[in-house]
Length: 219
Length: 225
Image 1 (cartoon, helix red, strand yellow):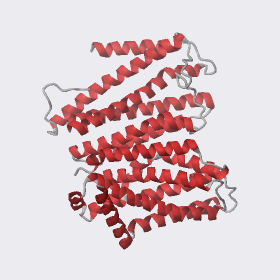
Image 2 (cartoon, chains in turn blue, yellow; image 1 turned 90 degrees about the vertical axis):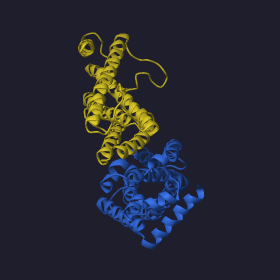
Image 3 (cartoon, one colour; image 1 turned 180 degrees about the horizontal axis):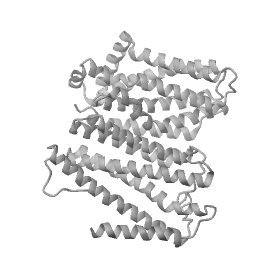
Image 4 (cartoon, one colour; image 1 turned 90 degrees about the horizontal axis):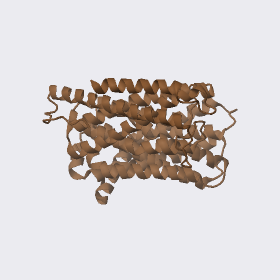
């Protein structure tokens, strides 16, 4: 099963590197949103940590919804969906697609976070704490958006519904990521409560995804 | 018919008791009255979403579209009661803190619960084929059910909240006047019965509509719950 998941992951990475569709959509979206936010608050912005953390995760959330939701829709649009279903079990497909989205979101964060710090002229008091918060939030966010994308690829008007279906589901990890990031901007050390919540959310979503994979990708 | 009039009489007595029998709570003054509606509708919201989750599990096991109709009915009523909980909470907030909405963690949690199940209903409306709609909605309903405890129990404890302690607080103590508690429990029972009565009616209507459209063959005796 893991070999099949790896094969799905490798196929999607090769396809993405060839076309760079999701990668460019996510990066351009993230950069545009970051530029708008940075320009809107202006150079005189005092840098209140709670606002900065909210800005950062708003940019990342919208960028994730723009790029990550394409994982299954492209298979349907290219008419490769049924072939993929024939050659790989549902759990392997879901794991492979989720891994691609995880890498894509991590790459977006690697691009956006340094730019965000430079544009707002700030630094973290706890880099390790921020990395821990971001790592767990990335796992939860990518899992939630991958699952919603898998469901919506089989529904009508899927493009318009991604945000409507995914955003309410990711409220908990986004709020925990915002308070966790705020903590790491002003205090040393890791924020334990937020890390526990993010870990619990990621665990629940990943476990549910694995249990329900057969039902998610039945067609 | 007897049930309907009995429930009407019961809820009328509870309403009168909320104003004339139960005393006001310390610091809450006249805002106390809303406790007898706000908390029961919030409770019924959770019950409705639990029923939706349970029926979603049943649908994935049985593939009987009647179970999907039950899940959809519970989610629809849950959204209705969730909206009522949000509105009554906002009225309480205006009386106590001077503003209908202040993004208090509990207000925010119930609002996002409303959004999650509104999204569930949106997903249903975006999927025309009955069997596929039922499967996708069941899966989304189970994800929502898994996240609901985090929204209700974890997020409100993550942030500072002005919201009063739950009826049974974190130290396990019941801090309510006995007559208030009697009226509160009576209201809780009344709203729960009201929910299951409306739910039973709605499920019967949905099953009849499905049978009329040829989506569901039905069984000899339609099970409601």
